[in-house]
Figure (cartoon, rainbow, N blue to C red):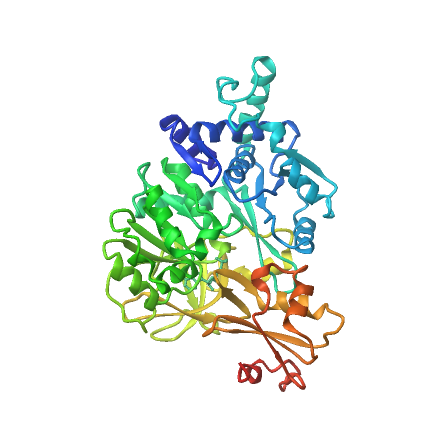
Length: 521
Ligand code: AMP
C-alpha cells in the first residue's frame, strides 16, 4: 500500500535508473537523477522543520519544476506551482492565500520575486543541486549529497517524515480562476492521484516503452496524467516547447522525432492541428498510438480530421474539473460520429460515482438534464483556506441522510443518451473554457471594474467565434483597457472584443441583463 506518490519513484528508479524520466528543451533527467535531486530538496525541507507545509514553486516550465514537485512530495510537504508569466498582482493574491513556508526558485528568478509581497524563506535550486545539473558522482549511497553521520541523520529524518505521512495528506494545490478576482486553491491529496494514475496506466496499458508529449502547463491539472504515469511506469515525458503549439507542422515533426506515442492535450491544441491539416506533411501513423484529451468540448468535426488521417490511434475523451483530480468520466471512442454530433464524456471511472441531480436534487430520469456531481476519493479536500467557497461546492450528498458524505457539485449540466453515456451540455454559471483555459468571467469583470473610468461592465463568451466579449458604457479603446488590466489578469483572460452600450440593460431583478446583451454579439 502506498501513501505517498514518491514510492513509485523509488521503485521506478530501481528498475530503470538510467532511463530518461523527463526532458525539456534544454535538459533531461534520468529516474536515478530525478530521485537523487528530489531527495536533496526533500532533505533540505525536512531539515528546515517543514512537514505538511505549502511549498511554492516559482520556475520556468521545465524539468526542474518536476524535480521540485518530487522534493516537496518526498518530504511530505505539498507544492503549488506559480506561473512565472502571471501578472504580479495575481501572484500576490495567490501568495496571500497560500502563505508558502518556502519558495523554491533560482537565483535569477528570486530577483523578480522581490517585487512581490513575500518576505518568507527561499530555497535556491543552485544551492541544493550541484552545478552542472547532476550530482550522481558525489552522491551518497541513497542519492543524498555528502557522506558520513550527518547525511545518515538527514536521510533518517526524511524517511521518518515520509513514513509519518498518510495518503490523505496534500500533494499539491492548483489555483484556478475565482469569480471575485481571488484565485481558488484546489487541494489534492496523494490518494486521489494514486487512484487516478492506477486507472490511467491500467486502462491505457502504459509501460516503460511509452513516451508522452506534454502540452499542459504544470499549473493545470491535465499535467498530472503525464507527470505521474511516467513516474509510476518508467515511461518518458517530453515537455513540448510552448511555441510549437502555434506551428502544427513543426509540432508533429517534433512528435515524430522524439517518438512520442501518447498525447494528452486540451482540445484547442488538437483543433489547431486539425484546422491546418498538418497531417498532410507529417505522417505519424507509425508513431502515435494514443490521443487523449480533456478540459473542454472536443468537436467531432475536428476529431474526424484526426481520425481520418490516423485511423489506428486510440482516442479518448476524458472529462473532469481540477476539483476531482483531473478526470472523473471517460469515453474511449468506439464508433463513427457525424461532424454535428456531440462526443459523449462517457462513463464514470472506477471508484468514482456520478450523480446527475435535477433542481430538486433528485437523480434525473430519461432525457432530463441535471448537474453532474461526483462522489469518491478523487475529490479535492476543499479550497485552500477558503471555507466559504468550499461549502458552496462540496456539499453533503442529498441522497445520503445517514452519515456525513461529501459530493462535489461541478456546475456542469449533462444528460444521459439512450446508450447510458453521459453527454456534456453546458455550464450553469459564468465559468468558461477559452483556448483550454478555465476562466470565471467574473474575474475579468472585477479587473475591468477596478479601472477608474469604468462604471458598469459585463463579460460574455461568444462560443461560436471563441471570443471573450466585454460590454462597457464608456468610450474607451479595447487596447487601453487590456493594457491596464494586463497587470491584474493573465493574458488569456484579456477580452477579444469590446462592445460599447449606451446604457447597460438591467433585468427585473436589478441585475445586468445578460440575455439582452447576448443579442448584441
Ligand atoms: P478544469 O478545472 O480547468 O479542468 O476545468 C473543468 C471544466 O472544464 C469542467 O467543469 C467542464 O466545464 C470543462 N470540461 C472538462 N473536460 C471536458 C470535456 N471532456 N468536455 C466538455 N467540457 C469539459
